[in-house]
Amino acid sequence: MKTKELIKNIIDESVKTKRKMLEIEQIEYIYNVADKIVETYRNKKKTIICGNGGSASDALHFAAEMVNRFEKNRGTLASIALSENISTITAIGNDFSYDCIFSRQLEAFAQKGDIFIAISTSGKSPNIIKALEVAKKLSIFTIGFTNSDGGKMKDICDLCYCAPSKITARTQECHILLIHIIAKIVEEKIFNQT
Image (cartoon, rainbow, N blue to C red):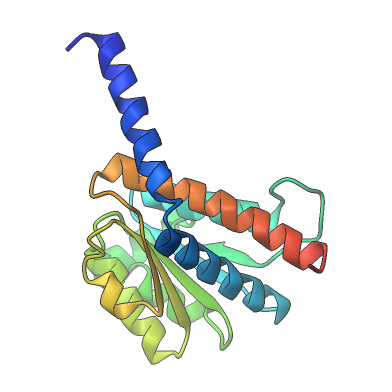
């Protein structure tokens, strides 16, 4: 396959996947996720997010949109990405296990009324599953972002958004769009009081 044809195919596949996000079930999940996050911020609580690899970057991106701004200059919103402190991550990984890098931080930071958002393109990452289990023990509301299969996450999370693809790249593209949609809704509802 020629490079230009490859580029066209990748873009076409991405567009087709995102079009599936327009299905009623997808819209309903996105609405429910955004609404729960808005409720959390209205209650002066925070979001705590985690993920591995590209999903770790998505967690950082989500937190930045909340703490700083998305499209409008406005007040700050409390959000912590558990993938941001490499010293903490490596200390936990070394002293305990890589499977505990998010769950131990969650134990340190989570408070009643917060939301824990777990991002995993497979829905099976052991450190994500362990963190979700700890969140349940702490009575923290959980939201998952995963693929169309959902993995183990779909049965653990209070709300689980399953992107309409099993392909990692397409799933990640849906997750970043989801983050932007949430950021837009949060800014509109929190700072315009609509």
